[in-house]
Every structure is written in structure tokens, then in C-alpha cells.
Image 1 (cartoon, rainbow, N blue to C red):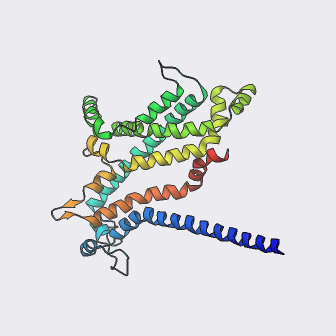
Image 2 (image 1 turned 30 degrees about the vertical axis):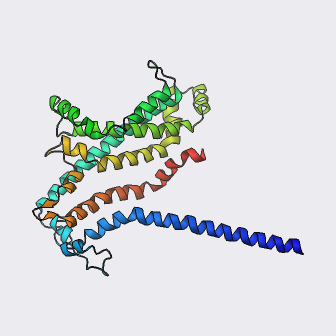
Image 3 (image 1 turned 180 degrees about the horizontal axis):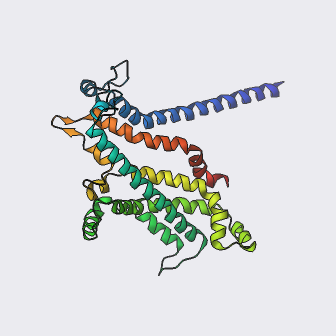
Length: 304
């Protein structure tokens, strides 16, 4: 009888401990989610405020303030101005398509080149002086350590000599170089999870190295490629420094336009918030559309 009572107490303590741990873990996750989501919430709500509400710091729509289309109206993107002619909206659409073209092309090139580089580093042995595969991989990653401002003058002089200032080619090249190291590291980890025996079996069956890579390996790492593409796209889409430095009129992107929302009275927070919200929406759409592939790519190394 005493043994059964002790077992019941032990089971009760175990269940209480299990529920306590779940409460702590989910509580911390909820707090972290609020911290992460709050900047987006602040941006979206600020785009629906008038100047007085922005200055007073009102947060909750319908409770603290009455939503207004002031910020969106100043950009020609409010429901009552969307069908009217607006030079600001035309400028926004031009910057938007510049961002789409530059970010999309750069991310695609980075994933293509980074996948090939990562495959070579994971399957073949290289030697450049004292550098081996691990040293070459770290060299790629070390490019992220250098602050962009250090490259400002060299890029400015080089692009001026090559007539690449304010061109799509120039921006795509610098953005591709910017995100290529991250793609190489992500894809190198993806290839490391795939047994070499799969390729060896494909070679025995008569496929070439390129045939084994394209028909066997690429389908397996496709979720990782999509995850790398999304990360590269986000970094390129939000990049401001090189866009402000190397462009002037033809290839300005959205971040440059967002940062320029200042007037004689100071920063137009409502217009800046409306622009930021409009700039966030495409990334949200892409993230929701490819959510399944992103999760699969991020967890590939843990399940293979």
C-alpha cells in the first residue's frame, strides 16, 4: 500500500514538473514572439495615424486613436486616391520594381553560384597554398566580417571607372557578392547531410557527375536552396548602404525612398510607416507562399 502511495505522489510531482516546464517554455516563447512582432505592429499602426497620434505615442487602433489614411494618402495608395494620378505613387512603383528586379536577380544568381561552390567544397578536395576546404569555407564567411563602409570608396572608384554607377548590372553584382557567402555556408551544410553513396550509385548506373548532381542531389537539397533564396532575398530587399551609395535616379530601391521621408517639420513618420508596410508585404507574401519549403530547408540537417 505504501509503495502505491509513493508512486502516485511521484507521478503527481512528475506531471506538475512537466506542466511547469511547458508553462515556462511557452511563456518565454510568447514573450519573445511579442518582442519580435511589436516593430511590425508599430509600423503598421503608425501608417494609420495622424501626426498628433504619432507624437502622443498612441498604440491600439480604435482604443487609443481613430485610424486614418493620412500616410497612405500622401503616397497615393489610400482607397480614395489609388485610382487617381499620383507622381508619388508612380515613384513608389518604380522603386518597387527596381527592388524586385535587383533583389530577385541577385538572390537567384547567389543561390546558383553558391550551390555550385558549396557542392564542390563538400565533395572535392582543394588546395590553394596553405588553404584547404575548411579554410576556403571560412574565407567565404569572413567576407561578412568586413563592414560595408570600408568598401565604400573602392566600390565607388571601381564603378565609376567601369561606368556601373546607377545601373542594374552594378547593383546586381554587388548584391550577389554580398549574400553569396551566406548561401555557400547554408548549402554546404545541406550537402553534408547527403551520403556520397547516392552519387556513387548514380555514377555506377551510368550518369555523369553533372547528371548525378542535377537529377539526384538537387531534388534532395531543393528545400535548402529555397531557404537560402528567401534569406538572400530578404537581405537584398532591405539593403540600404550600397543602394544609397551606388545609385542616383535610375535604380534607386525602396529602402532609399523610405529613408528619404523627411520634411521641413522633421520626419514624416506616417508616410515612412506606410512605405515600410508596403515594402514588407511582398516579403510576407513570399514567406507564406514558401513556408513549407523554408521549414523543410531549415530542418533538413536534423532529419536526414
